Image 1: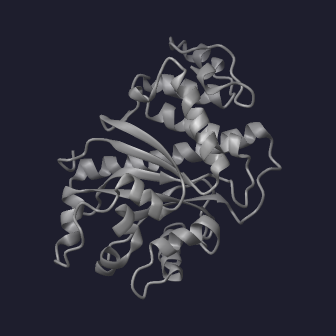
Image 2 (image 1 turned 30 degrees about the vertical axis):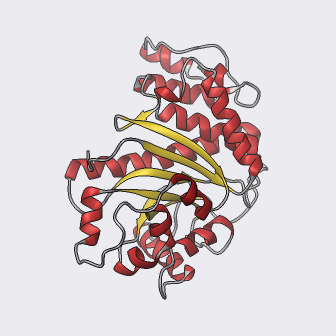
Image 3 (image 1 turned 90 degrees about the vertical axis):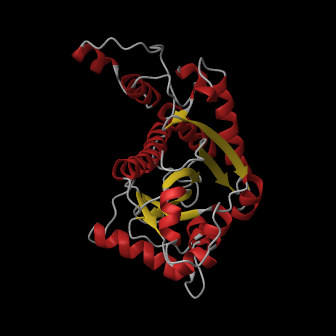
Length: 304
């Protein structure tokens, strides 16, 4: 493991909207009624803690004691010391296809990552510069990327680092431009939010695998992922759909009691795809609950 004191991985579901936080908690409770529970959730061989927080970044920091284990020292090797010996936090930016962060949660996040003379507009420009150079000016929706901040000024002054040990933004366009998503059917919304959540977790997973694989000093291991509601702002996706789909993706992704093929089938089952065709075509002997499931009507425990 990349640091000696790694004892768990944490997924924090953060939002000001109490209805969404209640939905996350409700569907976590439904999962606990299934044959599995949060005791079955692990990631990189460490237990996964899922917490729901209705409030601000500052109140979250106070509740979970998320300040960095190594305060900024000003020494030239500070960044290297962090990446080699300590874990960090990343925070979701549910953005748009050109990386603008001028409203809602994105603007609060850009302000959080500001430091010294580096304003929220500079944070936005830093995100845009990295993403738009990489993707030639246009980010396809649901494509997630980690954007890191590593200057001395950032570690010294940024609230992102000093409140939450966060030195990266997990950016994913949930839409090309701000627009309502509620014209889609409820089933399509479930599929959209589930796939977005899975992509976010996969992006963190890939980054951590690279850190463990190369053992270099470029990237710290991420042990805390802060997610907010996907599509609940301009998108207008109902809170119940967002809460259920995000929890379903998280508990399948991190459930160590399921084989990879079982996770595949449970994903397809939640998304109401005809997974039976795959089982029959490849003559797979997959031990899953094959009872019908509809995300629009069935409780989450029925899935398993």
